[in-house]
Image (tube, rainbow, N blue to C red; front, side, top):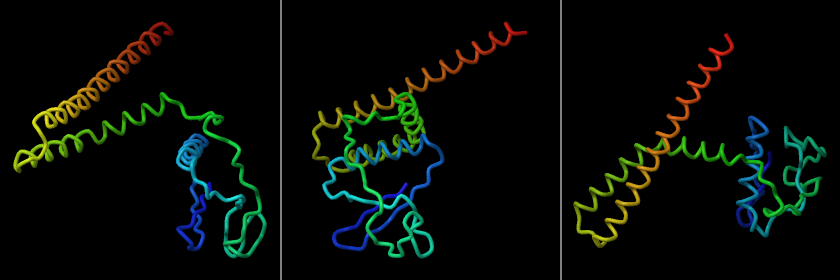
Length: 168
């Protein structure tokens, strides 16, 4: 995948992304479409190939900043775009990420609470209480999700064992 950009009136830069799979490619495409939807300065053409050595592999132009040889397609809007992402997979990825950073979030939260207690805070006790409630709810939600996830994994293991017993 190729991303072309320039900052202000500077030289055009080209970024290549190499995706491991079609799913990863679709995730990148979806994320890029969502972040570029309001970009009014998109290009009208691009190079479907790569600039390797001294020329573009698609049209053999020798100038790296040469106008693209293929037209871009701006006709697809988010309303028309059927996002290929699997919501269950995305939820699982977010859950795994939050689990991975849970302890760091908890440590940072405790650090902020300690700093607020150590100095005179401009926050009212009501705001402080709301912050603690929100953090507590987040950590409790993560724990509940982890418990449910572990319960489902246990059930799947039990079901697999039952199937193995039936097959033998």
